[in-house]
Image (tube, rainbow, N blue to C red):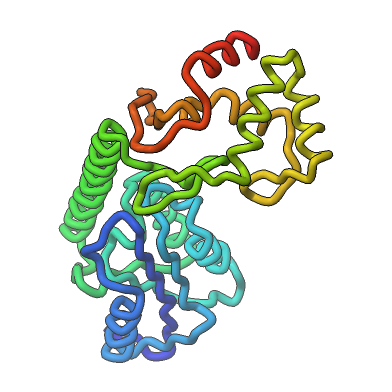
Amino acid sequence: MNNFNKTAAFYIRVSTEDQTEFSPDAQLRALKNYAENCGYLYNERIIFMDEGISARNASKRPAFMNMISMSAQQPKPFDVILVHRFDRFARNREDSVVYKSILKKRGIRVVSVTEHLEDDKFSVILESILEAMAEYYSLNLSDEVKKGMCEKARRGGLQSPPPYGYNAFNNILVIFPQEAVNVEFMFRQLLAGYTTVEIAAQLNSLGAMTKRGKPFTSRAVKYILRNPVYTGKLKWTTDDHVFIVEGQHEPIIDEATYNYAQKCLS
């Protein structure tokens, strides 16, 4: 095929969920080699890269959406989009069909440099099979990751950044005294009859700040008072289940105080 004076954009994506895929540098080398061997022109302005981003939803990939937006410009900024594999472009068949259709109307093709397809009817079927396999892989990988996280939660493993009142050491929560004293203060004030709005105001007047370095709000106080982590437990939520398991950390308040606080909040 004569690609003289035709320009190629590169799209590179590396997710955090798949450690077997090629690095951004490896993908870029492969795309450059393919472009040079096929006679495509390219430049740094039309190299698009999403790193550490899941492939499931194209709208959440900023570089991808920027590439689609740029493809509408006139004159046409590129004639083809090169990807390492078709699953770099999309692991969702709906996204693949939608965005490839948009690009096709603009005279732009998507080409995989490792999955060589001819421009014929059979290649349309083969490309659909490759996309279906990519979507199955993504869904299955998501399920396996979720299973692993559920099992970790059941064993009391930490699933998220440490909550207010704790730091983390070797994946175990450790009491942070400067914050833990404020946690005790919140529970004590709630049981004394103060509202979460009043407790937030009291904390702010004392110069206390949240984990993110912001003033306390009623919502932030209520979130802390609702969290069973302060009784030595861990809470983790999936799409269809809430886990509350015994943690490996020291509690800040006792169970009776926590239970009474829940009645006060209700």
